[in-house]
Image 1 (spheres, rainbow, N blue to C red):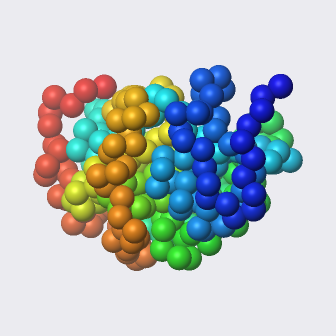
Image 2 (image 1 turned 90 degrees about the vertical axis):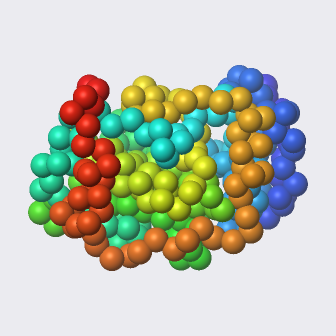
Length: 253
């Protein structure tokens, strides 16, 4: 039976991340709370909550860590074509709750539960209200068809989850926010753990100690620049600028 350090409510006395288990990869501690103070203290150290409904809060710091450097995002030929074609719009922070709820849906449909529990949704909604958590929404015919949400601290965006209800929906959201982060000189997008979908978008794995050094260089004790809450149409200057900078006939599949 796994014996984990137990955190008292609202405690931020997380163990050193070097104590995280190798299997399951990165499991570090249990307990604590989902208060804004506790969650932000964890993220500043490269730790995040991840647990199923009915379990105590579990805190993780996996190694290797999966990240995307905004200026190294990989755009496939089909995704480039989809952005060029348009037919949808993009917004930021317009419906944070809907994006989080949509990210939870596939897990509920597959297994009847999800780590994006009502408690998690409430916690990240409070982070959103305080200016730390942000969402990107992709719309088609006024219907939400894709999105991503996460936390911005200093010059790091911690991606939490994304979803698609149309082909390339989540990818378009990722391209959009990566472009903004690149313009704001963000150092990286934290993707937490590896999957093939992210790898095809340019995600790479780095050792925990290198990731933590990146955090030390990048995180400051103030929220990142506030993203606009206004809807941004895909035919806006953002798309035109992106196409100008990225319209490469040799784009890969």
